[in-house]
Image (cartoon, rainbow, N blue to C red; front, side, top):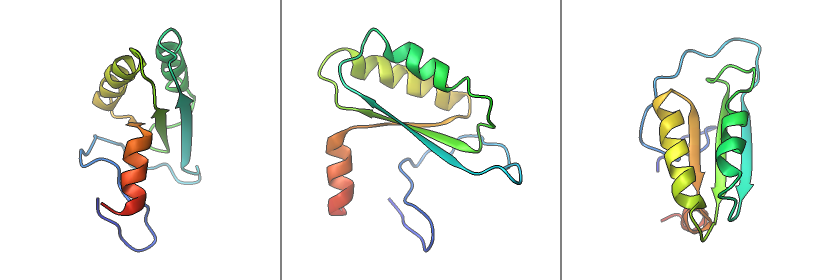
Length: 103
């Protein structure tokens, strides 16, 4: 993970095809805390991605510490939306702990 002055660290090394930002609209981060929600996680993510807001002006963090099938479902959804150019990440607490330690 690389960190530069006045920029937050990048969570992914992949570079989705994101259109240039529209002036005047603030960048937003949407965080979705999830735990064992295999029956609703697909609808939740799908509905968030339907926001009437330019996809280059928001990112979605799915904070997923599930111990059931939710992890796989979320992983598939994140992959599909990334392929469409959305900025979305699946983040687990273990990942956050490692990032905090700087490893």
